[in-house]
Length: 146
Ligand code: DQA
Image 1: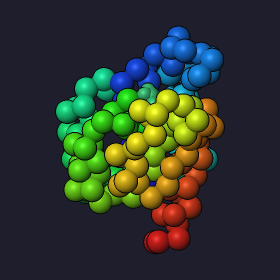
Image 2: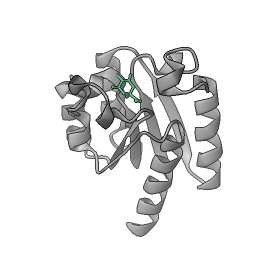
Image 3: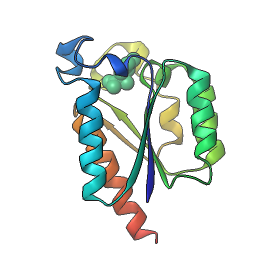
Image 4: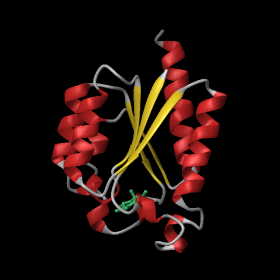
């Protein structure tokens, strides 16, 4: 199966940005965790990170017909982007929303997730392990629906 992992703005700053909230592991460590997880599920994975909303919309559109699942942490765009929500709905690829921090226990402006409305599962507050859990979910789902 083919899984696309999309990370939004500032996720490339992991390890540097607010370590008390996002942890001390950097973006490279996240990529390595994703690669190890992909191998254990025999999945092909592409990772994409952008600080630009339109680039994320483009990437989701390009996934149509090319990926079986999407793991997405839209970061701050989670709470603002109807364009990302619409793109996920347009392609109809099974998607899992991941947040490193426990967004539910944070500020009021983080309580809405537009992208989440097009995702069948949400994993938050698990640190970078949330990405492993999301890939595991999609891999199991893929086998079930084969
Ligand atoms: C985040 C939570 C968002 O509210 C925030 O804007 C981020 C990261 C997370 O992974 O916990 O940039 O998506």
